[in-house]
Amino acid sequence: MVTNMFQFGWWRCKARRGVLTHWQRWDAAYYLFITIPLSLAMPLAVVLIYIGGVGYPDSKMWRNGSWAPNTPHGVFLYLCKWLGVVTMIIGVLKATYLHRKIAAKWRALRAGKRTGVTEEDVAA
Figure 1 (cartoon, rainbow, N blue to C red):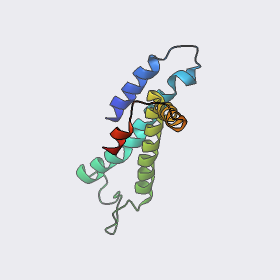
Figure 2 (cartoon, helix red, strand yellow):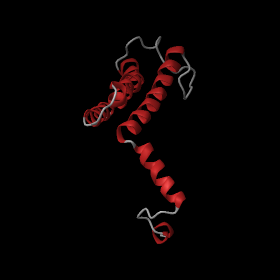
Figure 3 (tube, rainbow, N blue to C red):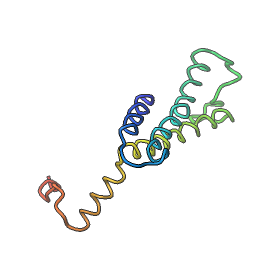
Figure 4 (cartoon, one colour):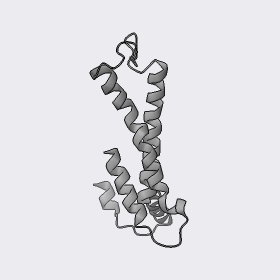
């Protein structure tokens, strides 16, 4: 799924037209590319340690019945996972320009312009 999002972002960036700097054209692809190792490191470690038995039990990420990683490498991988979620959100927003669309819709609503959504639609 993460690699598919990177592919989507890459195609969206490639399709951008106009006079743009390298970063303006490819920023979303870079964010989504960084997401891949950050998001996949912890699940891969879980598979290798707990299913594959690599270094088990010395390399366990959870000790003493904890529900969250409480070893140094477990905490590091857990933080990487959430940093990957943040970079994924940024990358998807930049690839789809969703933040601009939401802001434009918000400005239109605040200005009282018609947006295609009626009060009856909201009440339903």
